[in-house]
Image (cartoon, rainbow, N blue to C red):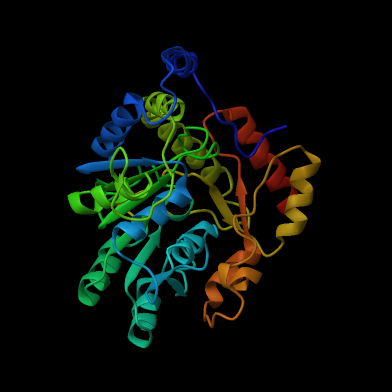
Length: 357
């Protein structure tokens, strides 16, 4: 079996978790502060706030920016539902604009059109599959509207836009460390920002609105990261460049090998660095190809088969997103993680070539 994901934890990670267990300080200890500083520095941001997962990072970021009841947040409908759920959990409502069919990311022109027609109080740009969204155009739009730009970088650790790492380009960046991500803490998330007030607001919100041990200035949640997760995260961050290069090498091998097939392979604009959380192709015969790959024990994933606005939880939201809806019927992700061997990549290519011909 060639799995679609295969998280890898080192003996160093296990050793550091044992150190935490031996210390007895399991929640929100010094390992969390170290990981916050290290990850923020990696992104090129001034501040990091660790959270319990990527969804709570997005929720806390919105709260820290004072986005809530009565506000509307412009984003993409072609994303994991957590992006929209975080907006709703903060008390705001999502407003969807269509995607660029080549990158699968929010189309700036479609976003501009929606923003002309709708009241918008913030923008969330999702770096889907590990490819940075068009932060230049979306940043200009946010500036013209005088609203914050939030980066949902849950799938894009280490990706770059014009040489700068994503997360620290907008007002706030949010990451996930779920096991299938390019680096993991088991479960976990991170907010990065250059805005000290936003970082302070987020840190307070994830800790019950606490300003001191039993002083609570506002209503918050317990969205804290554990010390064990942070210990794992620190070792994963140290290995992230290695993980990224392995993913990029596997992606390049897949792209070269699939050039003679009818599949549409991922693009990488010159001003971006794709980190291939997913290697996503397009085909109008997706179900048939999935059946063929299943026969050869090749893992696949469909991210995402239903646009957010077509989910029952978001019924009634008027959305014009034909490109997103078409992509949802055609996308298919192939194994690209660091533990896929060159021989396995070649096997995937051979099976697809045989099927296509």
